[in-house]
Length: 410
Image (cartoon, rainbow, N blue to C red):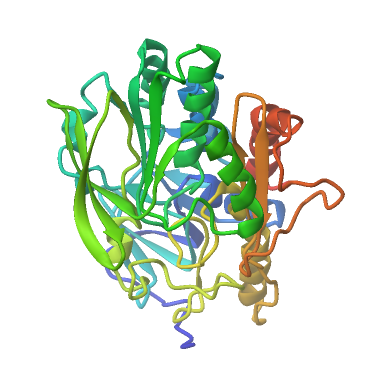
């Protein structure tokens, strides 16, 4: 790793300079900012264009009619740690050699240390016709605050037929969310007495229902219980909202073919990627993700750059639970580097996904880089559906997020 000059005397065109500059006001950026302030670090600034912070894991429950979307949103100024300067602006480029970040309207911001946590962007245009289809009452997506309530509206207006749910190529944020809403929809149709006259189709680009066998087995039993039609290796390419058809590229037997599935209602998940300024910039690796050491979260080329969350190339599940484990590791290592020491804290790839399999039951999948289950409660069998974890998803985890994670306490 090449060490760069962390303290240039002057950078031409720079309007502001900060000891630590954070990109992103999502879970990763706020968690790190809070922990840095609790550690006594002054002169921390954060760049984030959105005036609202969202707890996105609740959007599955919004789409299922369990909670109102408003409880997932809070003003950014309310969650930003005290003493952190907020640039309500959009990053357009990073120059790690000059230690600067370019923004749309705030000019160039200089830093001594950079933490990148920009999250993922939803590539709605990556599926032909999807944006137009989302203007119709038969297509929705829980991956957007404004669209999640429509999922519930669709389910309640549905009178039988084909309910189609899609999942794109990985990685995406919360890889379990596309199948969660499919299970909840099937359970809702069962409760309404129309599951037998309906066809629930889950068309996913993945080769299996879940990448860890211990959790895949109970999910396969859930699929059988609802008599769901699961299509593996199906990549959504086009949606025709006029005739209500979805077209996929499907892999089978080493061949790729085109498959068209008619739908009465469609829950679509768009392909996702790192933001454009990351993909096109120097801190990205060959695949377009921020190139960090997967254990220390320090950049592989610039020692004063760290990153966490969904936009990195770490091969973990992209979830808020992963950020909860990454943030303290990153902050400890950043503090070490700021003090002239080598980073020593270690992230093991922990990720977690509470898979809602019905309105009452959850399979809590927790695992690390090796794909081994890493249960928080080792005395509880989390590989089977449990009713008690329903409360965890609806009540405990949101409270942990707002009062623990975002305040640097958990």
